[in-house]
Image (tube, rainbow, N blue to C red):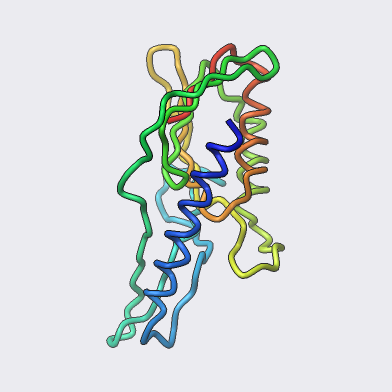
Length: 176
């Protein structure tokens, strides 16, 4: 399971770095992984925080945002694992658009996880932010709960910490 997660992260980071290098060309005013707060009233903190991949000022001094998203997933068989008595299913997924489906997501654990990994304080001093780019609010339907996470440039530890706290309350966790 870890090898697949590493592969997905590395594939996205390679794509991200190349995309950023391309977008930087001929730009004088830009930012990479800028943390912004959306104005959408229905989104509560920290679900209203987003790290935009790339933002720049165009010739008219208007801010323009570029999102770098993989448009394909790798083709591999579902990986099944058991962690702390929870069945984990890892289906083909994209690091920047990862759906996590389970019975119950503890919002009291999810919020601190988001705050840590979106790096509100911008404390990580590296070339890239090593942060998630956003996490959706919990979606509830037919007795299951789901979130979608853009893991951005976050390390694998962010992914593993999320799975770890989800195993506390759930018999099954599906990743896709």
